[in-house]
Image 1 (tube, rainbow, N blue to C red):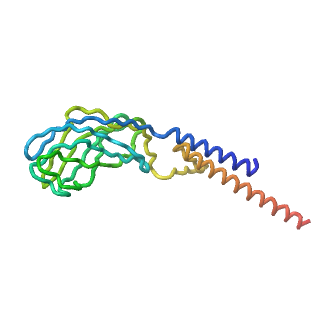
Image 2 (tube, one colour; image 1 turned 90 degrees about the vertical axis):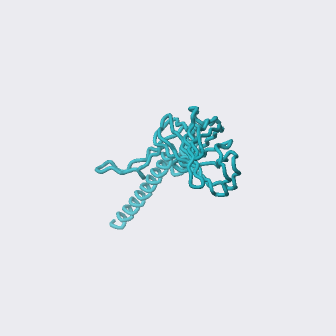
Image 3 (tube, helix red, strand yellow; image 1 turned 90 degrees about the horizontal axis):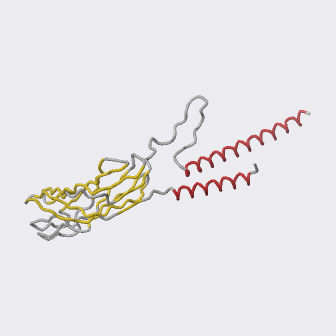
Length: 228
């Protein structure tokens, strides 16, 4: 196969691989879910219902998960000055994966008046898939630390997932290992895009080998003519 034809074939394979990657992009389903929080505060028990929105955006090998409250929860009998309140929360993982993800955010950017619902800023964390499949993200425990006290708010209504992602487990382990003996270098098998890169590398190797072979034959013919 000529250099031009080989280059065209490689370009076509890369284009097809790119299309496959686009078609295989992970699907996401999001839904705002009402969460009934039962809060244990320093001045007694309180409750509040807030719609919770959870979003996931691809970030490197994982996803940046952001949890948002559309209404305030709990309250304080005294004013909370700027930066006095630090929130954090857990997100329960379900479906193909399990466990919890901790999300955090900045302290309050403005003072919170006494006896008013505490507005929670968006909280975020990074989720790296350990399993392949559909993973659900459900609001978990909210923790509010302020003025040396801790308020814990637990969902009491068994809320459903606010987000579902179709994910693929991270390959991990760094670059592919090469086997001993005559196994030689192995092509990566992590996806269409990697296969296209491997194909390009293999094609380049073949071209270099072909050029080296042609050079060797040319020099051999020249040496034979000199001997004659």
